[in-house]
Length: 217
Image 1 (spheres, rainbow, N blue to C red):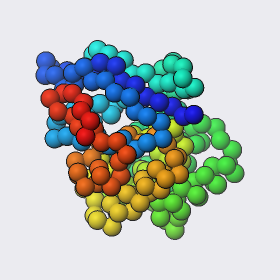
Image 2: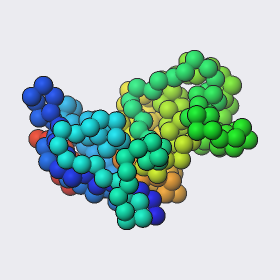
Image 3: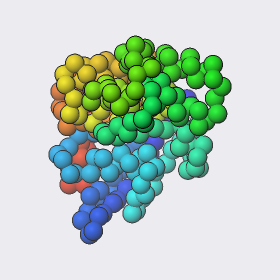
Image 4: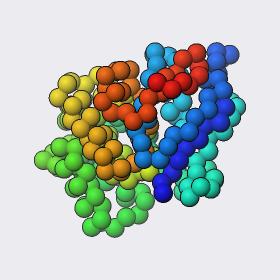
């Protein structure tokens, strides 16, 4: 049984402006949950709070494993990953970019090579593994970011507008990867998109954020 995520009355304000108000929700394990809503309505803020990168003003983020609450710390944070819209690329090879998180975690070289090779094959960048990552196109860089997140084998994967500002070909590749992850239940996916058609294509559960609150889609 993987991680499940519960939000309990999450609220957040910036400079007196309420962004989120009493948001409560349970994200079921093994599903793709898609969060939609107008720009500036708090979707990305909620994602950062869920990913433990930002603290709410009120309320709690609860992760459960084997039906018991888990302490928030490094061990839990290593089981979840957030992919932001802007992919930060290191000035080294594509392979080293993807391998970076595994090296930090102390994996052996052979396992790193196997995992990175498999992920690059999945995202269609295997032929570019020795190329400098800074030479990739915007769409390829998005796929690189997804590979870097996936290689860590997170139990919960947060995706913030994974196909924003890229061409149709790369968007279709990324959607295919997400669908493959979904079919193989590689992770519980919680994703933000502004595209209703994409939400319907990829999501098992649709959520709307309006006036700072969460609603079923």
